[in-house]
Image (cartoon, rainbow, N blue to C red):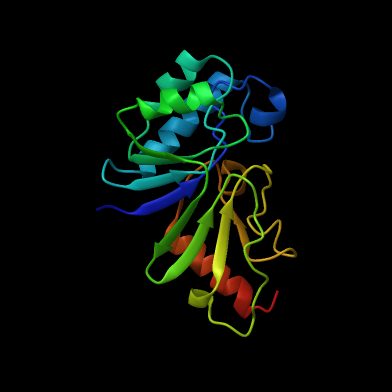
Length: 185
């Protein structure tokens, strides 16, 4: 097994400048081509990638052509733009191994709840070690701050906007959360 990564909100084919312009692109095609390139420079075929929704929007054939170019084994969690018909299309992609509405995920004794939407799974429970807490991993907000909802609970954002348009390694997420907690923020 390879590494484990998280991301969300690729929005392949979503031709609205409010999406691609803040990410530093001139159009959706430049956006999509560079997202795929960055993804494949990081992700190997053996890596597991949990994509927390809003995979594509617009032309489904074009969006699927982008998805099929991605390295890794994709686990897709439904986002608000992932319609029933798109969910069925994802299930037929050779690189998609799972499609779910939300998911509990345990790794190295850490507990996660994966959802497109930021989800209050617990408060900060500062009297408990991090491995005894439930960490919400989410996207949806298009924030550049992975701790955007930190004031609400143990929520970490993985949307492309917060990670230089790249998936983020699970070890890096844990280290960033530990650093945040140790700073007492």
